[in-house]
Structures are given as structure tokens and as C-alpha cells.
Length: 147
Image 1 (cartoon, rainbow, N blue to C red):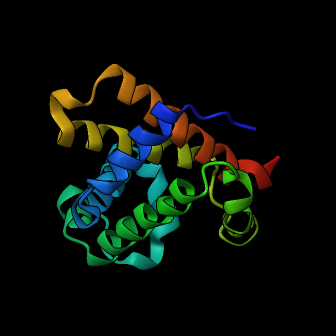
Image 2: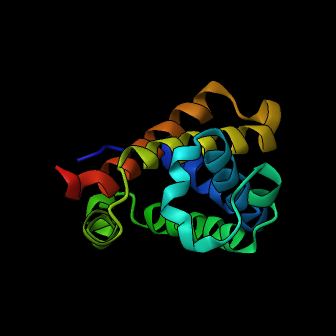
Image 3: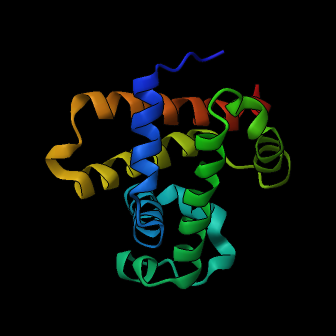
């Protein structure tokens, strides 16, 4: 079980309450698909992903990025039981979609970069530490079915 300090809870809640999901979600997913092109194989039905411009302007990618970010809301609201919160989603990604669980970590890293860019100097090491802990727990929960 993960133990969260009141400061960490406050930081995570603050980050997610100030995010523009329609901006951050697509940027994070686009960055992941561009920087790590092998992750594109799970998006074959999403149309043209042949270059960075195509990925950045693809409405299906943007919509999925928003969906992923809203999915993290579930973890924010259930920080004391993130593992159970994502149990069904872990099964879906493992058994039906066959997503490489390392892709969750890659997307989490891209999300951290996009959020850091948005927050600028306000993205202190303390905030980064809390955020990295949060996404590490989410990534672990999503990858749980694979073990």
C-alpha cells in the first residue's frame, strides 16, 4: 500500500485541478507517439500517423489523449486504492488490447514533460517528486495484470 502525505495529496489535487485537459491530454499522447514511434502500433485504427504533423492534427488521437487524462481523475479521487481503481483497465489493456505495459511509463514520462512545460518554474522538485510518485503508482496498477 502506498502512503501519501497530506502535502503529496494536496500537490496532486492541485495539479489536476488546474490542468486544461483538452490541451494537456493530446499534447502528452502526441509526444509519446512521436518520440516513441513503436507505441503507434496500438493506434492502427486511428488513421494517418505517418509524421508528427499528422499525429498532432489527428482528432482521434486528441480525443484519446483527453480520455486518458480524464482516466487519471479516477486515481486522484481514489489515491488510497489506485490498484483496485484500475483493475478492470489493467485487464482490458493486457488481455484484449495487448498493450506493452512499458508504454504506460513512456506516456507518464511524456505527461510529466508536458505538465512541467505548462507550469514552468512552478514545477519544483517537490511537485515533480509527488507527481512522479503518483504516476508510478498508476503505471504499476495498470501493469498489474501483466505479472
